[in-house]
Image (cartoon, rainbow, N blue to C red; front, side, top):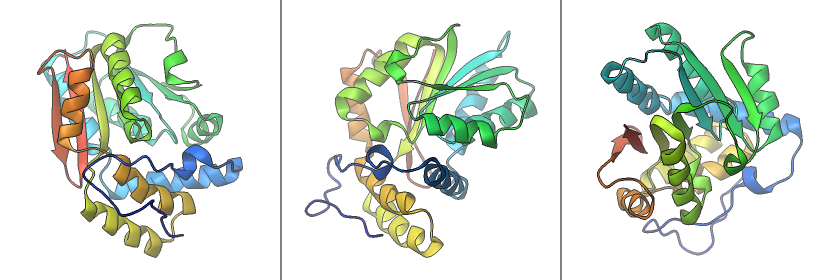
Length: 243
């Protein structure tokens, strides 16, 4: 399936092209198949590494006195939280993990893919309606913020700043023509789900450059210089804030 983009591609600013995952009504089986392929993409593109490296640095600087409560916003298939669960087990760090996603089919797919007895729970709700029953230490998100417009990103930054006691980390894409064109051809050759083939390149056009994050952080209630913007192979642009 080809990617239909309105007019000429312009990587100078964020696109507003909608993604099929956000707009198309499909069955639960098709949605789950899309999430499975997205998890494959995440593994192949080293998507988990920036978040796990940030967690490593944080717990080295501030060894937790008790279990860390971590919320993953836009948790989707739950693969990031399962990676965090494995990371915590290897490091001997006690955690309680919560995945928050608006789509109820995400919850079903994530629960199905998660081994019984793991310290992970899945909640279906709009992020801004979420009322945690206990204080949250850390908030993470992966490939979530590019789904939001600028005003929503600022609102999300403010929510994290007000909610996360120890810090937060945003893991997203770097808007650039190279990954856009590479992913278009790669996803077609791999035969991934049609949503992935369409939404992957669209996600890149909706994503960020460093100047975007500088501008959005300046609008948010984040103290100047408190958040660090970092680039990671291949074409990940992340923002972290540790208190």
